[in-house]
Image 1: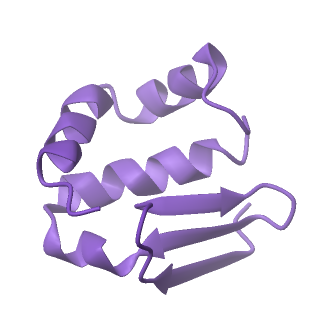
Image 2: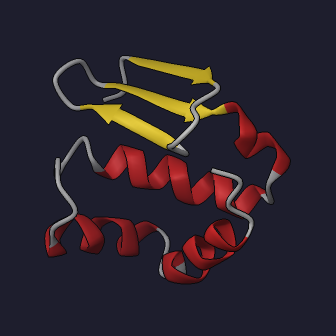
Length: 82
């Protein structure tokens, strides 16, 4: 369950998640990227509410909802302004 979602400029991250509070933050720069990049970041941060680290279990959660997450991540990194 997400308790709060904040949109703010972040210099070094596309998004972040606070597992303790259930809050996620999204970078304002995502508005400049394709929608599927934003969707990847949202799913990525929501997956952290179930698995705090980037373990195989975490990636399985992301893959369940976005089977093409690797392609989306590559696209996001190709445009990376950070």
